[in-house]
Image (cartoon, rainbow, N blue to C red):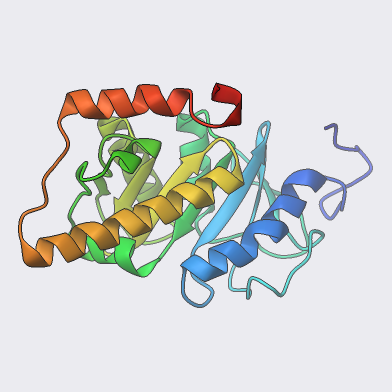
Length: 224
């Protein structure tokens, strides 16, 4: 997609598909995270469309959706972008991802409050890595928090991380997959915490995780 030079900072055609995807998937984000918390973004090249700050997820349209470049400049959209733009920028710079979802979903946030990583208690964890790490706390919306998120994901070779006393961040190839993986982590967090109330959850060994990763590579209609 090529942006028009005539669009200007409020141009409706800048990243039109990405902005439409933000609007389309905002209700799913609202189902995961309370109130107006959390955010999501969709990247196209060196720019990304991101949910606006402090707005109900059913209260904006594609023309409202902010577009930000990887230097943090607001280049299009009628509304101000999410306060977590630094986090989205840093993750996009560090990962080959085209979508990011950040939620305060209850079970994942419980893990974040406990400052406890999610171990491999179920094979579905390989959708985001072999474990979900915990990024060190920093004030929301800061460069320091953004750097902590990327550092945690890189250290664990994961595409998701909890953030201490905050929530969950997931990166993926597209926004639908990012939301799906956020749901996986939320469900596995609930399973882990419930199992922990009864006893010590059993972790899958490394070899079984490697097998699951191989199986996932051929999963679905295209995989036969």
